[in-house]
Amino acid sequence: MKKGISMLCAIVVATGFGFASAEDSNMSFFLTSEGPGDGANLGGLTGADAHCQALAESVGAGGKTWRAYLSSAGAEGEPAINARDRIGTGPWSNANGVLVATDVADLHSDKNNLSKNNSISENGDVINGRGDKPNRHDILSGSNLDGTAYTDGQEHTCLNWTYSEADGSAQVGHHDRTGGGANPTSWNSAHGSRGCSQSDLRGTGGDGLFYCFATD
Image 1: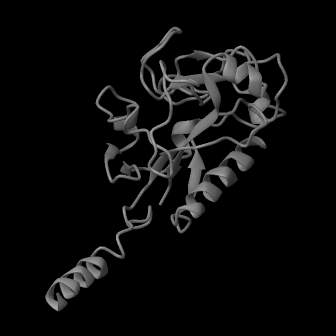
Image 2: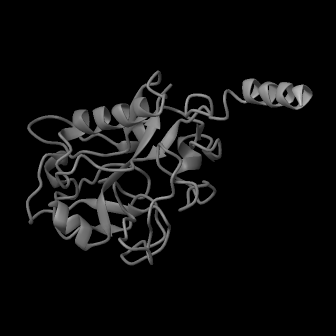
C-alpha cells in the first residue's frame, strides 16, 4: 500500500498536480472564448488587445504580449494598420501545444494548420461552428485574405472597432473553414457581417470573437 501511495505521489509531483497551464504549454495563439459583448465595438485596437491580454492572464499566459488579429482603416490622417503586421513573427501554437503556423507567410498560406479543432480558445475549448447551436464561426478580422487592411473606401471594420449599431459591416473569417460568402473556407476573410451590433453579428453566425497572437 505504501509503495502504491509513493508512486501516486511521484506521478502527481511530476505532472504538476495533474494540471497544465497555458503558460506551461507555451500557448501563443487562441480564439477568444468570448468578446467584450458590445458587438464590433471592441474599444478600438487598444481595447481588443487588452481583451486578448486579459483572457491570456486568466489562464496563466499573461507574461507574453498579446495582440488582436485585426486590421484598421486609415482615418483622420492616420495610416491603415494591417492585422498581419501586429502579431509578431511566429511560430504560434494553441493551448494544446499544436503548431498552427510557423511564421506570417505560413499563416496566410494554404499550408497553415488552422481549423475548428485547432483554432481553440484560451481555455483549450473548441468553439461552436457551422451546424452547432449557436453557430459562432464568424470571426472578426477586418482583413483581406493576406491579412492587410482594405483600401477600397468601404466599411470593413465597424469604424475601426468602435461601432456597434445595426448599420455598417465587419469583415469576418470562418474558424471552422466552412460556410457561405465569397471565400467560405477562409479563416480570416470569408464575408462581411450584416451589421455591427451584437445581434447582427450573431445573426450571420458570429458572436464578436477574434483571434489573439503572442508577439513574443
